[in-house]
Length: 142
Image (cartoon, rainbow, N blue to C red; front, side):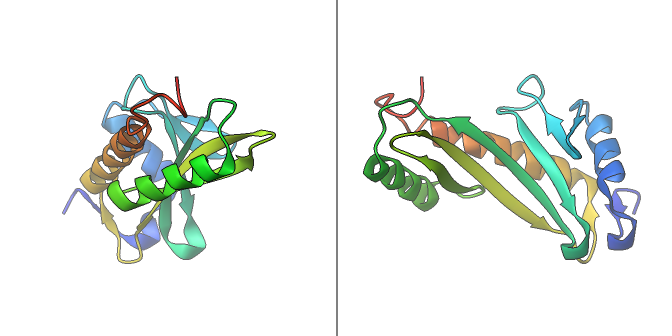
């Protein structure tokens, strides 16, 4: 199975090669891989957590000023109840402003398929963007 990567052979360099082969143009950013909006729906990072055998997809967006804590957490709850792939959470405060984060951990304990890595990245990115688009009244994002 040429598309299958055994767990013991998986590392960030292999993931980078998989993403390069899919024409996603990853760049190294502080030890993680970054894939820009030019290649996927919403730019995000990819990290490999070797001891846990997990690929972590993550990203964030700055929230507009003036959003209070109640509004922010109500929105996060809506996203977690309606959007499947990312786990959404907010960091910040009403005073300092918020960032909305998305996170997904893909298990690789028994290995993975190269196509599944690419498909999961694309789905994660698209799902995060779909979450941002749930802001129908432009309360949180421009």
